Length: 148
Image (cartoon, rainbow, N blue to C red; front, side, top):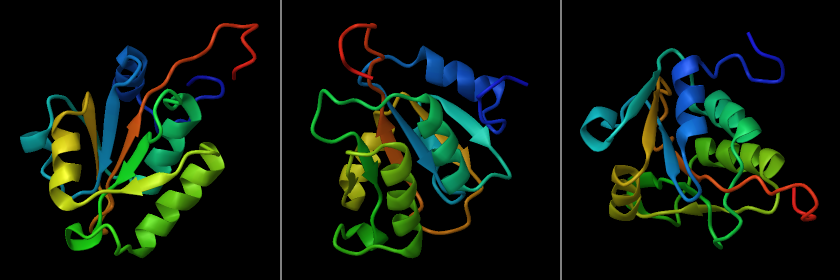
């Protein structure tokens, strides 16, 4: 156990998050997502739902403030104008853990392409459909820069 690290972030996931560089993206996907087919690297989060994993990741991963968009989610039947209850929960967690960042819904093909290019996929056991999100890693600024 570690101090101030959410306990559901196991050694493999912590190692992956630490190894990622600025601009790398990590996808957190539901239990139906073809993670092994789409992922260069896959970390299993069996038995865990998406929202607690997203919340834990956002507690330790700085988001990229060098770009206008750093959080993306899938859409119901590929239509960014349509959302589900899980998307509202994603928005809520992101608003709390990453204030100032907007969750951007992507159409099916755009989302899949981005996941396939991601550094890693975290495969959860989330049962809800379209419960997929991507976050882009930022930097930790040096002390004295006035940035967090």
